[in-house]
Image (tube, rainbow, N blue to C red; front, side):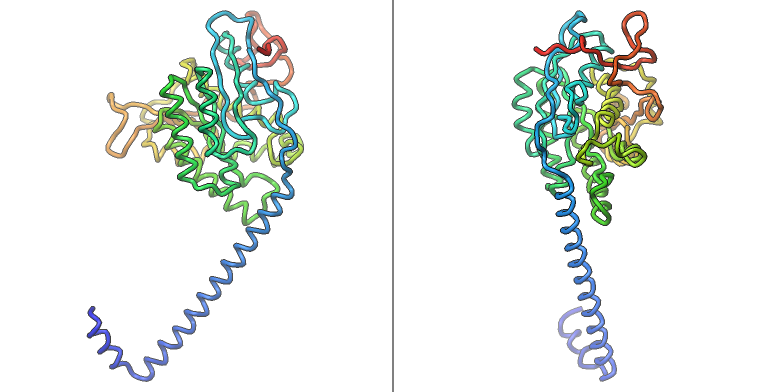
Length: 366
């Protein structure tokens, strides 16, 4: 419609029509004002809740214990080098003993399962966002690592980091490590909405942001040649059932048992990345997805591994890169890989049922 015909139609309007239009305009203005008022009220509420959460969650008072050193020195073979990158969840903030940190748990598990010594370097920094990963990679590459475990994303949600920027830094990190011949396993952003000090409606938004970031991380990591394990609300039900035991004293970070749970779920993927995987692979027709589909499904099913795969010799199909979804068989079962106390062993020195325990002789600080 041109401006001339529109003007003519306006002239043809009756007084009653003009009155109705004015009334509709007043109603629309009132609705718009109400929506704007609710938006302002919601924004104010969210800001107050965020400020309250910051007050309840204390700042880091001391760095977490370091577990760097040589694990499984009693085993023969070439020493594997493991680097741990990321934020406080990777560093193990909230625990008090080096052996309770994620790095020590992974190093112990790899060493016992492969019966090889493992050299651990923890480069994760408490409070870091994804933009801080490049500095950690610079340090990691000096050690010529065989495998890297990365836990990152929680601070990007709480600091409202730009998602594309955060994912871009993670993707660059994986690409640099893979170019150096290092295998990479990433634990994607956990569900920040599961944290008790965060109240609704901020909790609902935090949950949504966490899932969106985790899905984007999955796509970026697999495209860059790494593997992911979705953490999501993995610890949520356990935290709700027994928060005193599963949370550390700050009510924000996991306890030693919480970290052990994360390590137990990620360990099969770490072993698979190293080429040591005794799980029965899911049939291709059941576990095969396009990468975006796999990322979305993994976010909704904590403990799911997403890795790149090929179909008919090709890594991409009409809808993009192919991805493989896997769940390790013992996920959700009462049996755990890790124990904070020495486990009873069987002949050959391994704990029963494939569990991985910790004993002081497993760790020698180098």
